[in-house]
Image (cartoon, rainbow, N blue to C red; front, side):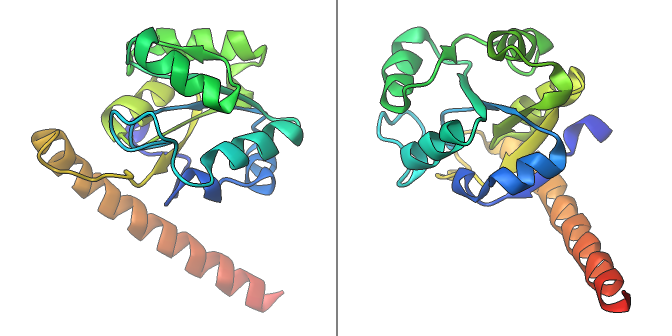
Length: 177
């Protein structure tokens, strides 16, 4: 069950900062496409995503697009970012994550998977011992994955509660020092 919980939960990919990654000990990101960097099936990146990726790369972070989609879908999308990519990753199986980390030239402990789905992106990272960042889906259409999204909602509620508890604890500690 622990493997279903991300290391961090954020709203959008553009909220991932160098400071956050440094605190996590992360040097490389394996990025999902649909509902993470663009709307589902779209070749148009989410506003600010291309600039965010360029800034992260400029600051020395290694980025790779990791998708279960075909190369026909992923290649032109990744080209807009100027990033390497791996298609047909078979997420949540660890094989795609392991290939991605190897392609980045980093150990698993220095990589994090970024995506919008608990049962693919986050679970796959957890299965191979990689950290993960769960994002809110750009287009949260519950009809696309009705059962999966329903199951994810209970996990997402628990994640939000954990984050709030952690923030309160850190706020209390900060006030006592």
